[in-house]
Length: 362
Image 1 (cartoon, helix red, strand yellow):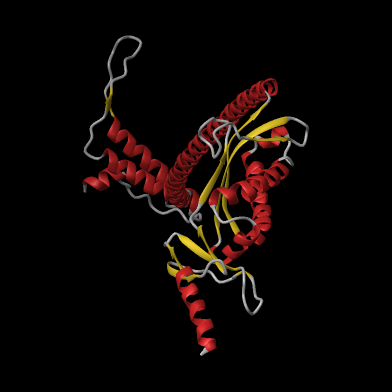
Image 2: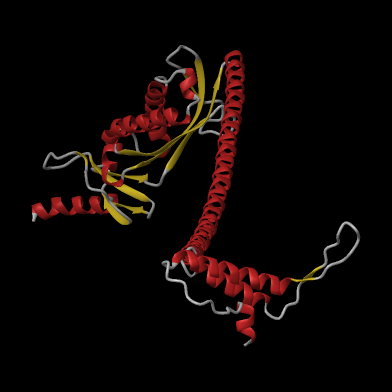
């Protein structure tokens, strides 16, 4: 009975001191134990999600953290960054020149490690940003970007490479604090005015040099193209000429072949004619040749009347029957040749011999 009298007031006190915390969808809750009969105190590693959660002050506390992405903007432009005044990052390049950089860092509390943020940093976004995110970010990025020389900083690829390196260093530094870095952007950068002008002049010179180099390369390529086109045209003309030459050669060969065949045919005909004439001459050169000639001559003159009218010195005319004259001459030659070729025989009584012309009349 006495024990119940002691516990009842305690239970009433707990009921009156009990609190309820509401966690929205964009938040995460973290519970901290300040007093425990078991002696286990400190930040609870459990992450409390969306809903209502009970805790009992002053024995326990409950922190609610925003887990959405936050942006830390460090810029020269007043009123546009996370701070109302100029807050751009100043650093020195590897060759000793002053450089001012406008940077945006995106970060958020990791819900699964929010208890580390509560234990090591704070419980609200402004507190976390000012206590950890801003100072750590400025120091690491000043180190990473300061590895570049002034001219290298103008090289986008090299600059982005150092930004990536800086992001990795930030992730490593923020992991024990329950903070994630999602992105790092270099928005703008400036050198001291005198050096900035020298750099801009140099950039303009490099740009012009690049333009001239591009024009030179374009001209070189145009020359190559023209040479190629001219070579192609020349090759085409050569090929056309070769084709025409081949056609002319084929035509010439055909004409030559035809001429050769015609010449061979003509030669064969001439040879045949010559051979025939040779045989004819041989035949005529024999014993019967004169007779054949005479007969042919007589046949040729048969039926033709040929007269020669010579004129004497005193102006008198005489008529000669050429046909009869030639007949007599041919007959005389035949008789003479026959007499020379026949063996001598005894004289016989002479018989009256008629001329070939008379024989023909008979």
